[in-house]
Amino acid sequence: MSIDSNKCYILAIESSCDDTSAAVLENDKVLSNVVANQAIHQEYGGVVPELASRAHQQNIVPVVTAALRKANIDKKQLSAIAFTSGPGLLGSLLVGTSFSKSMAMGLDIPLIDINHMQAHILAHFIDEEGYEKPSFPFLGITISGGHTQIVRVDNYFIMNVIGETIDDAVGEAFDKSAKLLGLPYPGGPLIDKNAQSGDPRAFPFTIPNVSELNFSFSGLKTQIMYFIQKQKAANPNFIEEHCNDVCASIQYTIVKILMNKIKKAVKQTGITQIAIGGGVSANSDIRKALQDAEKQYGWKTYLPKFEYTTDNAAMIGIVGYLKYKELKDKKGYKETGISAQSKLKI
Ligand code: KG4
Ligand code: ZN
Image (cartoon, rainbow, N blue to C red; front, side, top):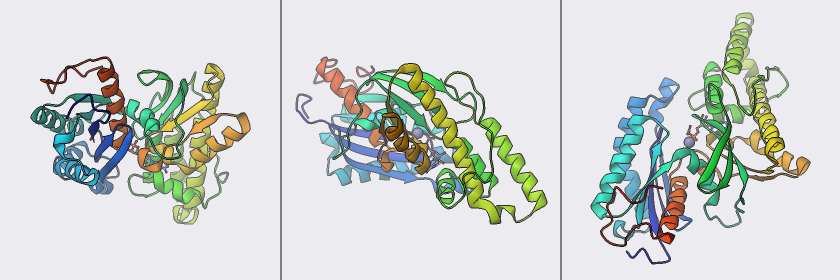
């Protein structure tokens, strides 16, 4: 397919953790976004890296085939392949990386490596009817199972991390608290669900005092662990009787920690556009808190569609498209004879 065509088709592949995902984009529009979750980790209460890479090996071909079929695109029509090069679990990343390299080489099309965290932020630029995209600069808040960052985003490719966790990620705080309550992995969505029918002020937990725009969640996790142990010693049925209140109190504390730092970042940078990304941005109370802040402080907040919050290949595809376009405009490679493993690194 000619790279001078107005339309380009990007196949995107994401395999950084425990979701195998493939998407096809026509420019900035998503034609398909297929995600295979790995149920195997549930019985272990967390992602087991060796099992994750083995499951990716099994899933990658069916997932890519389904994404192409759903998009009604033949692989010969593809303009480029974008894949997650990191950060993530090495064994998991290797499956997506080697698959993408081989496919790009076989088709003799460009291969574009994508940073997973950048993709969580740029997911806001997927063209969706009725969804207004942020303008620059904005603050990208990436909250997931592996990261908690406040990022100043000056343009698609210039981003600076201005605050981050010094220990656990916020998603880990959700998942580990859920495990202490006997809830299956990943516990974040279940804490969220239970919290909706609990009292957020039932059990007060401490907001940690961390410098600058940084976060810490390990102290909270320890506090929750001792709290549950103590309550269970006094009443063996404590969890059954108070699960929703405990979930609501944990969620209230975590949302407060996040919101305090976001407010501080707004004050420090003067930037009032906030765009959240990562699995935890699916959380109903963080969404509510941001919508309230919009009304109260005049911020503009951007909440992605649920399917683009947790790990997915569509977000890899949008960065692939933006990078592809940038290089095409700069005539960064020749139309023919493209080496599948070079030329497109920017
Ligand atoms: O971005 P993601 O899919 O994977 C990583 O890159 O880590 O994020 C997964 C994390 C898990 O910790 C999961 O529990 C959390 O996102 N999560 C939630 C919710 N939905 C997913 N946490 C709180 N509330 C939710 N509704
Ligand atoms: Zn992620």
